[in-house]
Length: 259
Image 1: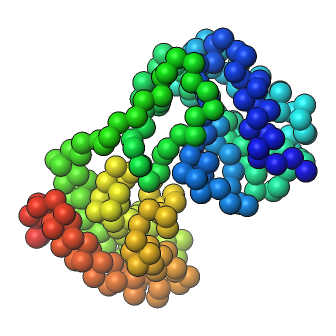
Image 2: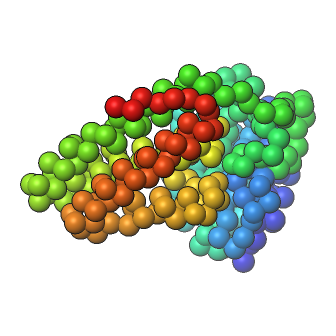
């Protein structure tokens, strides 16, 4: 059975010979030094835009010679060509997420990382042009932070959008509105407090990003099976909102709207 080190070395040897491939690195568990038996591999390449999609297909064709590809999901965008594949002769958990970014469009932003970041750190395999840059920190936009908090709070306060479906005994609709208007906004607020540079990660890796007790609080929001569970969690959500608002004010020195 193929292991991750064999696959990484195999693809590195293939990519480094291409003059239109400027850099290759790993993100995710490899970059954070958190690899375990369930970890996938997050490959990143910085290439000339004219080769962006074709190089992705070259990588996949090369990997298919190593082992049969038994699943593949593509996502082709202007700035990134991406494919998630699995090789037959590997662990079921060892999916390969291959991201090829356009050097001309995304090179500067997509190759900039922050020291000791909790979510994104590169394990650089090669960097021909020194395009990967490290910064000490990123400045927070307090006005933006406050705007996101206010919008999230106001969504939670509109609990009637959930309650009407509870009263109608329509679980699926109640579930949808509850997640959109109650649970998810509370996750956003928690991230504003603890991981303001990674608000858009939502639930992704949240158990590693937040204190365990906070993650446990948020878990309860999603542990619902019935309309009664949703009803009970509306009251719980109000309590969390009150606690998080106090913590938000203490962190940022912002007096939030008490309405």
